[in-house]
Amino acid sequence: MSSPPGRGERRGHPAPSPSATSNTGAGGGEAITKTADVPKGGGTVLKDKKLVVTQPTAGSFRCFTAVCPHQGCLVNKVEDGTIDCPCHGSKFAIADGAVTKGPATKGLAEKKITVAADGSISLA
Image (cartoon, rainbow, N blue to C red; front, side):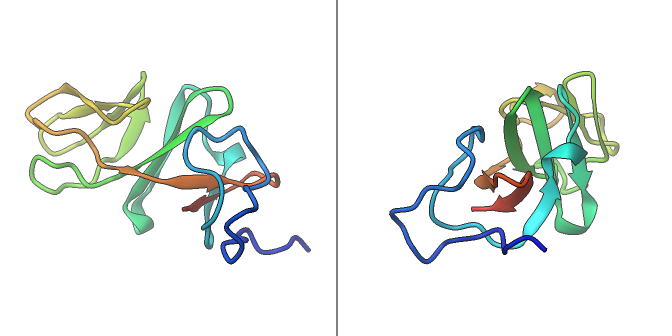
C-alpha cells in the first residue's frame, strides 16, 4: 500500500516531485486524479469535483475550475489544445485557462495542485 499523498504538516519539506508546474510543498490532500489519467497535450474533466486537469507539455500539470465563467455550465471535454464548454461554445487554453473563443470574457480560475512521486495529483 502506498502512503497518504499529503505531508502538509511540515512546511519545510517539499513535495516528492519537482515536475509539477504548480505549487509543490506544504499542503496536498486526497488525490483528485493520477498523472497517467491526464493525456499529454490534453486533459481530463473531473465532473464530480468540478475541476479539469491538463498536461500542456510532458510532465507539466495544471488545474482549473470546470465551471465556465460565462453562465456557469460545466466544461465537458479537452480537445485540440482547448477546454471546451458545451453550452455556448466558449473555449479555454489548456496551458493557462485563458479564453481562446467566447462568449466567455474571463478565463477559467486556476487551482493550485501538487504532484506526488507516485503520480497522484492533489489540490494544494
